[in-house]
Length: 103
Image (cartoon, rainbow, N blue to C red; front, side, top):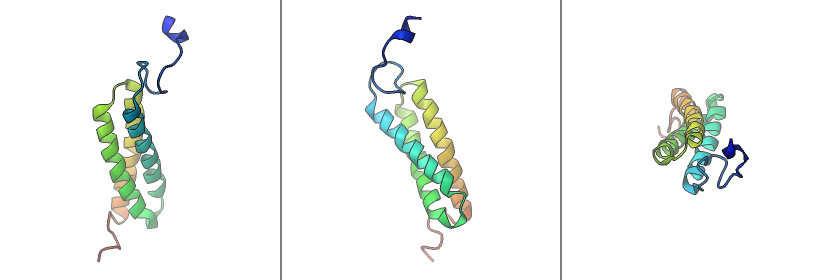
């Protein structure tokens, strides 16, 4: 019970009390790109945005999983990776990374 009253040091996702700036940045980028890819995948004509945002989100999330230190960071990364993967695959189905740009 002593750990429940201890003040949080570091970030919201660093449950070990140490700051993790690289991991927090990767988590934030993955979540933002995942949300962007997820939302833009709902519109057929925005396939370039959804596929590129999804691809970059998958890459940053994968590296974030590789360097993550706590379970809370990994949980957020999995949410972002899922959204980025969904957006990427729907963007690829709607036209792909270069659909309509390169003929």
